[in-house]
Image: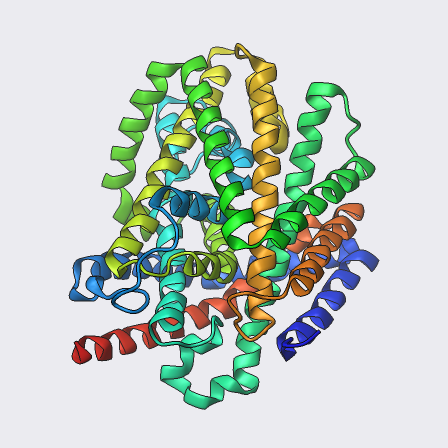
Length: 493
């Protein structure tokens, strides 16, 4: 295949080694990666917390500064996609399956199973549960995605550089980024993307399987999950083949429509007044506690520190690992927007929509738990949302819409990833060949299938989090490079 760079072949070799290790010695693979992950969380947790808080502060500064008027492209360029479609694309790539997977399960866990600081099953735990969930899925995540995407979009559309992570570092390192060092940076980005999306596909297949079992008695197990992945792979490859302006655009709009429909049904059929009050109160609690939460490391409380490692630091490293994929995709669909418009849209809209989503699903699940209607806390993560729907009117319709949404998110995530991987392995081409996208699509699905067959998803998750540490240093360099270039850009005006 022409135009394929060394990044493609090097990453394939690394993927084969990692997946081979996971398939041949899954238990050992999980033990080793868990130990490394634990070491990173304990040793570098403070660094992750400072890094994401700094990035959020930087995003706010850029929105308010004169840099905000700079356009991501030529001064005459205008956005390719409407604002609604753009937001739908942000949402689909940035959160996807996680919203359905954790929508009810995470707030419920923070309330009934393992609260951050409060006593379980108390009013304080209820308030804290949503505040912490907003924190994990809110401004910090989107600021980090936004800064990575901004850097890529600025250099790609304003400066005419290829759409590669390595190209954003040229103001610092010059031609060195066209050699082995640049290849190393891009390999790291592709490696994190491949495994991040493969893990997401694996968890998505598990939840679809759980939903189909709950509704129609489809057997839970590897064969069912294999069939689900095979069907969805065919669908997302068809979408990828049709191109960015058709496949992903239409699917993202479908995602948003299904998500709004499901959210509306949960708000109307669930404890409506409680949801609205909880959303308002929790949003205020999140905003007023944001600074304290942003810098919390619990240095003198071992139990709280364990919770931080398991949740906040896990999430921060997980989002960093996803940054090359999501950042590159957001950059690609954001040409023509000003920095102010871009960062405000990326920061605020998904955070507020996500907060309302978690308020609706979380409040409903916690209300069911508190009133003793059903013990949702004992259900497995992938089943919580279906168990919750079981106690509500129109439970069959709710469950079917949820499964359709997971499938739609599943397809969009994989479709977006094949596009990004295609870009990264063809020197930053904005229109990677379909053959390359097809290859990456099959590779992602194959990884998910292999690791599902040996229960290796947790070890794979650990691997991504380990990859997040070196990539975080790349993000720091991207920020320095971006600020240097923005300063020069203003001098030219």
